[in-house]
Image 1 (cartoon, rainbow, N blue to C red):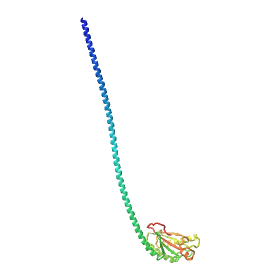
Image 2: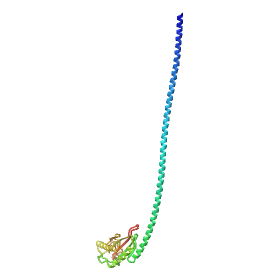
Image 3: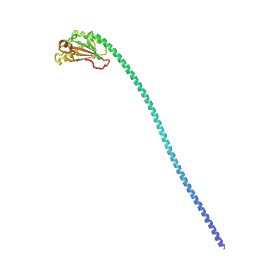
Image 4: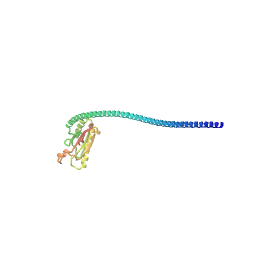
Length: 267
């Protein structure tokens, strides 16, 4: 009987332990479940924190990019303003230079007009004096002195100056020496008698004789040119003695070398 009681008590104890172990297992399982839930929550929180950190980093990069773009834009704006300022300075300088150039051109034109008026007056006075010695006519660039055979005669086939020729040339040289800034060209012509070659050489010799005498009289030889035209360029048509006498001549062309004129010099 006593053994049964002991056995029964032992069974009750074992049952109690079994119940206790079952309850502990249930609590442990619940604790493990809560631990897994906390782990998942912690993982989700970490993932969210990582995403937020990535978003914050991206936002920071975008902010840096925006700041750099703003800096570039500001630099570009400053550069554009600098270029604009420089262009305005260059424009003002160009306008000032153009204005000065216009004023200088106007001044030069006025000076040229005044100079031409003075030279024209001087040419008028010179022509008036020369017309008392030889026949003259005005040209676009000066004047021409005509020395016809009637007052300036050479011997037949001769280029020697006669005393009368020298007297005429001396008076011409005296008038020319009173004025400066003129170039001279001596042209020789003959009538139509004889060959072209013969008359060409004769016209050149006579023009050269006049040039040499003017140089000896004090006219600068460097301002005198010489050319023979032979029997070309007659001033009188026909073969009469009167026409031939007019064509046998020497001309001295005077050209203003200080003022440039439009047109060709007369021969």
